[in-house]
Image (tube, rainbow, N blue to C red; front, side, top):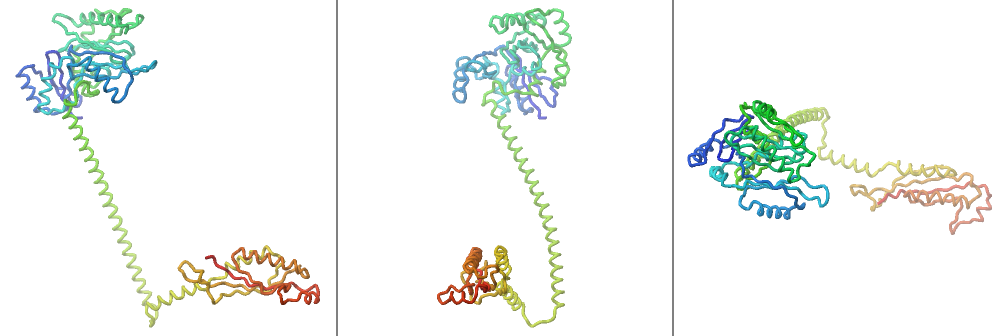
Length: 500
């Protein structure tokens, strides 16, 4: 895990420490004078990790306000007007949306806060910026305290912590949402229990006056303290219907959040610094000018990560190509060996054949000519199959003879897929109409329907002879005089007319 430089700024106090892998180094203190500034600049020469500045002093203001629910530029303009109204003289300010109301217009509940005395922090920021330090953000103790109370079942909770170089910090949470916080310095001669007793009662009265604490509800006061101080606090503080006291052991709390340090007293400063290092929230008060070098570092790391990803992908792609090339080379070698075997077999076959005077070109021409001749003599299966199917439907027709032939004159309009003209196939069908002897009209109609059925299948049908000669030169009377039992014979020429 990358290291971090942690700075703590209190009223009249400033110190720095480093954090790496859960271990917090000893603090190095710097005075707010020329010597202290020079020492801090020298410290920065050897500590280039991202900087997290934790501020904890009295001059931090909180305002809880309800405002219309807006978006985009309208919301930005409204927040800017509020900043100019409340915190005109400081750049260290923020607005945090706490929740959106469920009833009415569903307005937003927003917590405005600011460090109202920028002179306390600007000298140290100028040194940081002069050394191009990557400032991740400027934070306050109340803003990073929320993880400590997320598992506390209380709708009205006052969290008390003591920072040795700041004082007693009181942070009020309304249903686990930060509402306000204030810092009370601890004067000389005052004990922690006396200060907790006085400030808890004062805060309880303040909440009652603002109607933030219902009359029937007690204020839950949670004190972060050392085991030695806890005994004194429990002896002096008594829970009552107005205030209920509870305690968080600072050593157990440190172990819970992973802080590897010994706690000799109730000073919660190392606790908050470790919490800031492990779970840093969104930047509170730093401006974009302050975080410029940190953002550049983030962008640089992102580009390095992208470059590493692309390099890894390129290596994988290259490895895949090398493997594929090896596989193809193996396949090519196998194909070359197979081709060599085929060539040897072809030579052996050629040597075993008798000598001939025909050249390879002549043999090729002969093969092509034979293939073309085959295409000029199509088999009769198609036309015979269609004729057989049609005859199955006309049971009175008895076939006496059937002859199939190819016409010498090609239909040049009909070609195959290569453009070669196809010959016309012709069938000469001779037969007799059984059961229709003497019924010439019925025989002619029956035969006419048979011809139409063949025509529908794409054939050209020509009647050569009919059971009754109906031509202009025929003699119906003569035929009738010969008797009524004459067989109804006929002959047809059926030509296959290929589709164009």
